[in-house]
Amino acid sequence: MKEFMLIFRNSNPAPDTPTQEQMQERMNWLAGIAAQNKLVDKGNRLSMGQAKTVLPDNIVTDGPFTEIKEFIRGYIVVKTTTIDEAIELAKGNPILKMGGSVEVRALLTPGENN
Image (tube, rainbow, N blue to C red; front, side, top):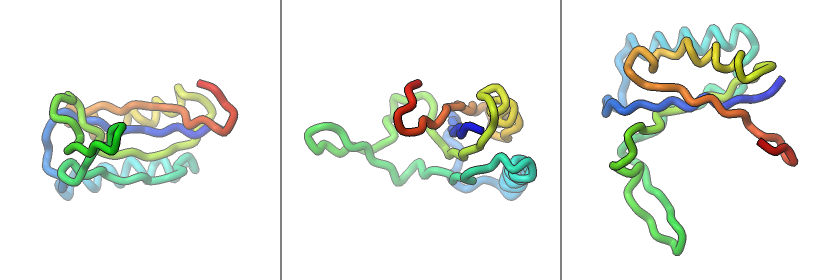
């Protein structure tokens, strides 16, 4: 089994606090992944307001940058046999109903390339 991070993005400046219905839908989706024993880390939502970016030469700016079209809203880590299986799990995420997207990336083990 290989681990994949599902990164949730959304260009909609939705409030940091999801509705009860949105939370329940997300919890049901996570429970389905956990029931398949494929959930490694339930991750978390990420703040839009409390964010900074550290650049070279110790420059700190407000972040995420306003010119970014999609903001990272949260993440989880799953374990599947292939990236295609991880993609199938991602297709069920409720953020897709809100115009968001899910980026799927393999987590590399030490010494592993791409």
